[in-house]
Picture 1 (cartoon, rainbow, N blue to C red):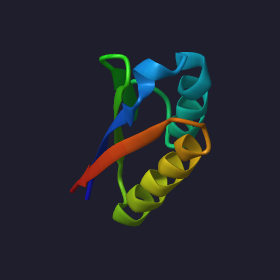
Picture 2: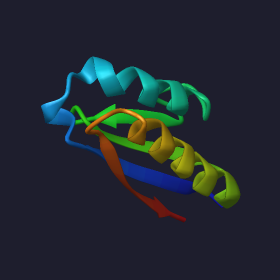
Picture 3: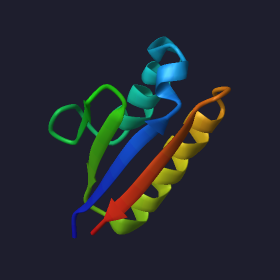
Length: 81
């Protein structure tokens, strides 16, 4: 089963992309290389393809935790199976 995580960085316009883009890409690179497994589009939105539902949930949690550590940044995500 393939899962897709779709996300949007909240308050990305209020902060420099340097603050949140690099940590986000670091987490996404743990899944695989872009553009085969993930892609960032429209500046602050992203999609990730994961082949295991358990890994999808853990990946979403890790992305959320990583971006919440940056002051003023949050992320909204959904997981589709």
